[in-house]
Length: 111
Picture 1 (cartoon, rainbow, N blue to C red):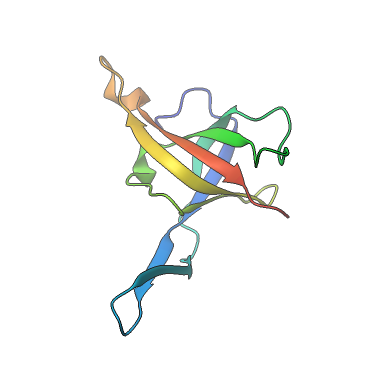
Picture 2 (picture 1 turned 30 degrees about the vertical axis):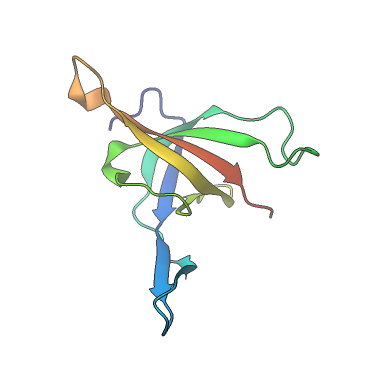
């Protein structure tokens, strides 16, 4: 468990990309949910869905989910909330590898 002070559990659904007959790649949906892993909400916007666009959330995820890519879906099974990943980065601890985590910047999907 690499996420410090985990407060919830998240599962990841990987984006599935297909190619059409012309070789154009496009996201077609998501695969099944992987195992739930510990995590936490690091930051949430004051208001989600403002005039300037959706607010961005920062989720702290277990490093086991790496690699996490844009368009992957992070789900919180206990509440049903879902986030679409915008960017993700591994955050390794300089001294203790067991406290590394994945920082995922996401947007909340409408219910």
